Image (tube, rainbow, N blue to C red):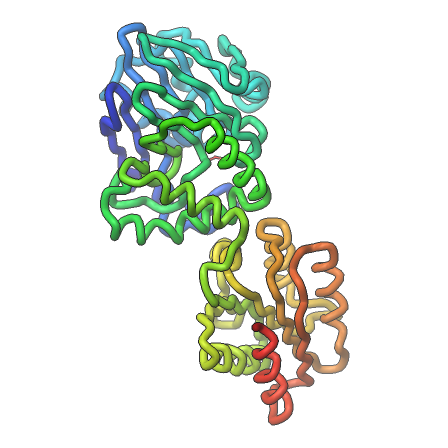
Length: 399
Ligand code: FEO
């Protein structure tokens, strides 16, 4: 059941948060059993209100009703669209239709056309330039382009007197945290794996732009006391935590000696092999995470991508399937290349019945990516004596 929250973040700035526990596949791809939040913000001034983003279109009515807790919609002077993806812009058409106001819509120059093409909305749109400032009710808003986080239109707003940076998708995460702010260590600890999953899946393809934009923000020397994203926790106790985590994940740095094993096993042969590897790697002090595709269980690709991003190494266990590799494994590999594509060692384990053909197919998929194949173990049928010895040796290929 979706829940709403309204809270005062700082002087005259309010958050309107919707806890969406109904969407099962974010962007119709990423499995999110722990849900997601949409955070919209309202700045109330004596010259009118400024609305920053909204909620997914499904919740338009609820959004407008919730907005009434903070401001009469007819008093909205500006609507700032930080990014046009409909999880944030989706309730704006209904708001413009119903508010009885005629606000100026501010955003990246790309936003005006997208408003028309997405929603058929002819708004009073004024594009903002990078670093442009607007004053309203004595409050200074600075708009900062943060392109490709994760669309070209993404901008942030810095509210100077409060030291608040509204960042839209940047510094956000999946999940419905049991708090609005980062005040509680236990909540932060619960939330951070969902930040990693969000970053890897939604922004991962453009992760180099996270580094560029964090560097850009750092050079501006803004006094940022609060980071207020459009998903997940608001960072007011220690915003440096989320910036550092984004920066580290954007460079796909290993968080330790974690080895992610993704495998399919139609009749158990590959599973027997990867379990030998998992046991040997654990004995050698690695932390092993297993993601199976078997007749009992199918892993979620969104979890795999998140785990691989900060892994030390990856093992792919593959059945040979119609001269290629198991279809779900091909899907995983293609998404790993698209979303993670980092310089990480990869060990391949294949099983086959009548031909060793899957290695060539997999190498063709990996060609041009940054993943580096360090060893390949082929097993004819089920792993036995020499195969098991070979697997134990292969585990030693990771330094
Ligand atoms: Fe949360 Fe890219 O929208």
